[in-house]
Image 1: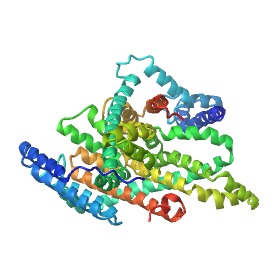
Image 2: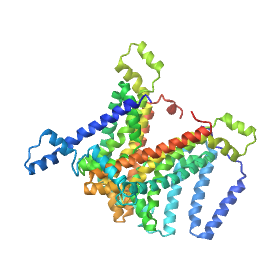
Image 3: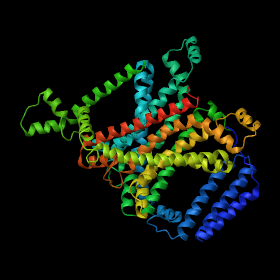
Image 4: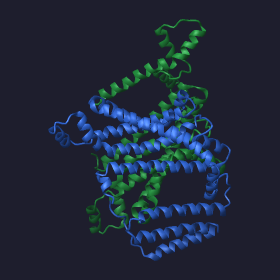
Length: 309
Length: 287
């Protein structure tokens, strides 16, 4: 990756632009000024850090500052413009609601994430993995299933949700089924591709060692497939949560994140909706982050992992 | 071309499985009806009964086909019962969202490539934004925008936009950075300005990346539009057909809406592929 291009405009031009922006904001509405000030403040701090440090911590601190800046703008803006809570609650109000209804959130978390998403994720990815190993043995199946799998992976599979809810009932089983269907094809396509990724030279070497099919599979092809498998797992991790939540829009027992979101929107209790979204975002990021971490441990040898220090 | 026979075999196998699965899934209902009418069902009767129910658990492929034929060809396009009408509603939201997402994605990518601060502060959030299940936000976006007085096409398009901007950002950042140092140096020796370097080197070099991500973005955008129609109880659009079908147990309607959505996705992605081929060929980049 090449470094970002630095433009060579004199510094005063930037400040003149900022001053102009402030003047325009003040002319439009005085309340815009503090909001804009927070934005500029955060940006300047970030720019200073970005210039000064090639240090590693810059890569972590800058996005954090950016996020905090956005949250502050939201909070201050919401208060200054007196936006109704029905439309957009302030971050502090969301945090308060989060704390007050943590037992509801926990029940929903267990119902949707643990029972629905996680069990479906394990079943779907496991089944796809096994089928991929089978497909890999038969070139005919490879030629036939891969295009079909690629096609299906691009389809709006969430649409299967109402059908699966009808088949498996309202409880978590139907949610898990939706997740299975959603994660199955991306995982299948990635694993099959991964199993083909070891090159002919390496396979020939295994043959000169008189390695059988299983030995070649376990010692060469599966390890070589790991980067692809993890790519599939990452895609599947985000799909799993989406599937579990959306499936609840089509009917669910009176708990679960999707159920809570759709009913709370109806009651205009948007702070609870946002609290659920905070949970979903945290879980999603943690899920993804966990898989990325595992990937770093398992595929430490891969160039994409060795590159970063 | 050599994969046509295997593909057809697999598709045929799926069809056979589908027909086979329809028998046990719909059998309880068929037995129920037979019991009430006091008839003993032979196996052939059973199969015939399971493939021709009104509200089967799993409709047989030909039932879906008939429903598709009736709702697309035999209905007036403007009729509320025409699937073409519903598909158009969804497609218009998809295209609007896709367009907005593409523009937003390209702008963000240009900013990220040309500004180091933006690269370091925005890029991590762009990635993080995709690990959160955004579709969960869909109902809220729609209700809030409705409350502000924006309804109809735009709320759905906003969801599509959110889903589709990400692949574009990632692909374009990669693409705009794809020129080698050698090529950039060459532009330097020609005393090219920043904008000339952008228009004549970086942008053309990014085209293959752009088209690849546009295909992903289009598929994501369609999912966004369909899900965007679910929570508000919309009365038109493919998502609304799914929802209405699941309320009234009209499984054939659900399946035909699904097939329609799949066809839409396939056609749109193929269309982008076609444009890609033409553009890259005219640019002399075709492989």
